[in-house]
Amino acid sequence: MRVYIETDELVLREFVDEDIAGIYELDSDHDVHQYLGANPIHSLDQAATIVKDIQQQNIKYGIARWAIIHKLTNEFVGWTGLKYETLVKKEMPYYDLGYRLKPKFWGKGIATETSIIALNYGFKILQLEEIFAGAHIDNIASNRVLQKVGLQLVEQFVYDSSLHNWYAINKINWQRGLLK
Image 1 (cartoon, rainbow, N blue to C red):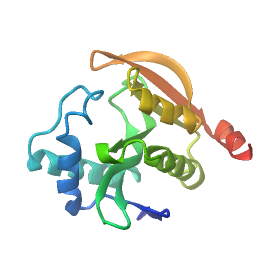
Image 2 (tube, rainbow, N blue to C red):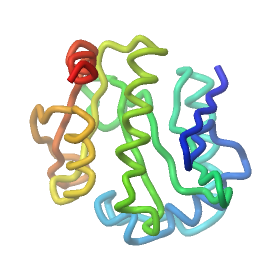
Image 3 (cartoon, rainbow, N blue to C red):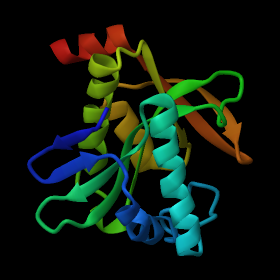
Image 4 (cartoon, rainbow, N blue to C red):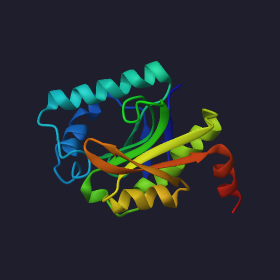
């Protein structure tokens, strides 16, 4: 299934090879990786591997992160969306809500806007029953986004030697949130 979603200012779409430079700019930034293990990438080859992995996940699971493109400038903003995750919480595979933006786009509501779109897609189109997300406990902005879009804090867990908050939302609570 090809995904292409437009908002007033953004396009959300599947990753293409032309996104490699954008991924490199995003994931080589130390500020972006502050709460992601402080391990930015260092080459276009690494960026190409990330894009290929995202494309393969889409083929394998029918869902993967979406590239965010600014409509007016055609600039790669970052990524958003759902991912079938098996590594972070090894005891349970799950659908993960995530987002990562270039710093110049932080604080503009893009993570919130695109997360709502991803939740709607997950519950309406994919008919998922539950969606999860994790955020480093010190990443106040990311934790705020997850709470704002309706996810509830379930517990804390250690990942990459750091404490993270674990969030969840099920389809029933998501539907209740739409009725408010």
